[in-house]
Image (tube, rainbow over all chains, first blue to last red; front, side, top):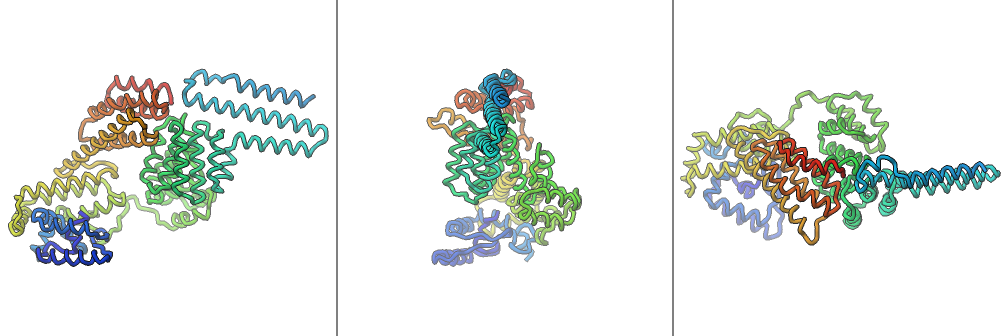
Length: 91
Length: 503
C-alpha cells in the first residue's frame, strides 16, 4: 500500500503511459548519477533506489497491476476520497 | 576461657548446619532446583556462621587483654572476609555502578544471595548491568557474557540477562519478549531480584512508548516494586487521572536518580488529566480514521491510517473493524464495479472485472491479516475480516509448525542449539497459539494436539537429555494448563508428572 508505484514515480493515476516512461527515465538517470532521491507517500517520505524504481515501472506497464494500484491509490495530500477512479471521474 | 567457649559453640553450630540437611531437603528432589539452592544457602550460611563465630571470638579475646586495636583489625578482617564470601551487596553497591563488569561477573559467580537460585545467570546479569552503567555495549563483552549464560541451564537471571543483551544490541522487541517470558519460569529457578529487574525494564519500556495504561496495569500486578518502579506507577496513575501531585512528589523523592527523573515529574505535573474517553487529535486529512468520514467512502484512506497506526503499535481493534467494513462496502459496490469495468477497457486489461476485484480483495486481506497481531481483540464479521482472520490463523499455524520443526531438528542435531535459542522457538509456539486462540476462528483442540505430539518428546529430551529441567518444567506447566483448557485429560495427566517433579 505504501509502495504504490504511483507514489514511487511521483505520478497520479491520470498519468499516461508515455508520462510514466518519461518520469521513470528521468528518475533512473538521476539515481545513476548518484543523487539520493526520496518519494512521498501519504504516511511519510521514503528513500528511492533503482530496484524499487524498476519494480514500480514494471508494475505500471502491466495493465492489470496498474488497475489494482489505481484502485488503492490515495492522493498524497488532502485525501478525502477513496479511490482514484472516483476522483478521476469527478475531475 | 569465655572466648574459647563462644568460638567452640559457633564453629560447632556451623559444622552442624553444614553437615545436617534441613527438613525441606528431604521433601524435595535432591537433583531439583530447590534442593540445589537450599544446599547453596546452607553452605553460605555455614561459612558466614563460622566467620562470624571466629571473628567474635578473636575480637573478644583481643579486647579482654586490652588490645583494642587488634580487636578492631580482626573485626575489619572478619567483615572483609564476609564480603568475599557473600559479595552480593558489594557488587550491587560498588562494582555495578562503577561499570566494572568483569569483576562484577566474577564476584557474582562466586555465589551467595541474591543469586542462590541461579549463580551463573546472576553473574551474567550483574555483568550486563555494569556494562549498561558504563555505557559500553560493544559486541565483544556481550558475547563473553552470553557464553557464561550458555554454559548453564537456562534460569531466571540468565533469561533476564539475555533480554538485556538483546536490548543492548538494539532489538527491543526480542528483549520485551524474553523479559515477559520470565513469568513462565518456576519461582524456584527465578531469583526475585532478576524478576524485579525484568519488571523495571518492562515498565521503563512501556513508559518510553507512552503506554501509561500498560505501565499502570503491570505495576499494579507486580509482586514487588523497586523505588523506580513505584515512581513509574505513580506517574502512570497521575497521567491517567488517579493520583494527586502530593503522591507524585513523594514517589519522586523516594526514587533514585532524581535528576534523571525530573523531566518525568515535570511532565506528570503539567499534564492535564485525561478524560475517560481520550480524544485523538488527528490532522484534518486523517479524520476518516477517527470516525468522521462517511462509511464506505474512505476505505483506502482508512487503510493507510491503519498502516501508520500499526507501524507505531497503536492500531486498535475498532479501527481494524471499521477498515474491514469499509472495504466490504467499497468492493461490493455496484457503481464501483461499473467504473472499474470502464477503466479496465481503457487500459486494455487481460483480467475480467471480477478477477481484478478478487485479486485486490485477496491482497487487501493479506495486508489486513498482517496488521492483526498488536491489537487487543481480533475483530470479526464481514467478508474482508473473516478472510483476513482465516489467513491470520493460517499464518499462526505455519509459524507454530516451523518452530516445532526447528525444535524437533534440535533434538537430533550434532551441534545442539543453545538453551536460549530453544526457548525462543518455544516462545514462538506459545505466541502463535495465543494469537490463534484470540482469533477464535477454529477449534483449539486439534492445534493443541499437534503441538502436544511434538512437545512431549521435547520435554522428555530437555529433562533427561539436556539437563534443562527449568525449561522442561515451564513447557510442561504450559502444556498441562492448555490440556486442561481443551479437555485433553490424558495429556494433562502426563505433563503434570513433570510439573509435580519441580524444576
